[in-house]
Amino acid sequence: MAVAARWRGLILPGVLTLLALAVLLSLSAWQFSRKEWKEALLARIEARIDAEPVPLPPEADWPAWRAENDEYRPVVVQGRFLHDREVLVHGNTPRDEHGRVGAGYYVLTPLVRPDGSIVIVNRGFVPLVNRDPATRAAGQVEGEVVVRGVMREPQERGWFVPADDPARGEWFTRDPAAIAAAFGLSRVAPFIVEADGTPNPGGLPLGGLTRVSFPNNHLEYALTWLGLAIGLVGVFVAFAIRRLKGKT
Image (cartoon, rainbow, N blue to C red; front, side, top):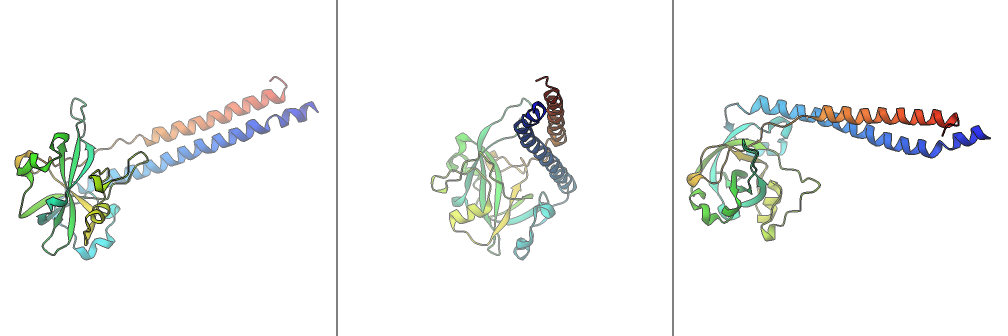
């Protein structure tokens, strides 16, 4: 009876250990998958970012556009900006050499091409004090312009990112479909063009801020979760042996 009771006493700890083990192994597997995704992203950037700009894909090819095939490809596009439909997306500049980050907005403006199709251009960053276009009037270029930059897929909304509120002019993601819906625009590209560092009149918006370097620590994270899982199994085995010997 005493032995049977000891075995029964392992049921609840065993179930809890299995649940915790499943969580730890899932986290480890997720980090391994993230590692593969990050390596593919970095390879994509390295292979494309320094290539010569090519004309923007024709509208007929837009439905087949895929990030894995086309993102970070340098392009050149001509058209005129619809400044009255610009969107200011909350964001920060990349850290400078002193580790400082500046709060402000990324200016996303629809660009109407000669054929009437539209691409959303991320023209660059403006500080908080330049939210009002009147404070950067020189940069609100009229007429035909030529924009050079790279194609980017729409920004995914993170778990803790607030919902966009177009009525109040509060935007938190760079999503061409959402911008098109807010302004009733049609024939809008499913990607964004991020402008290069060619200076805008007056210095704003500040372009050329496409991020091309990302940390890749997923292997360390994956091994950490895996190590914790192995450690948990070892602790439970040690506990079970002591329990069955009547030492706990």
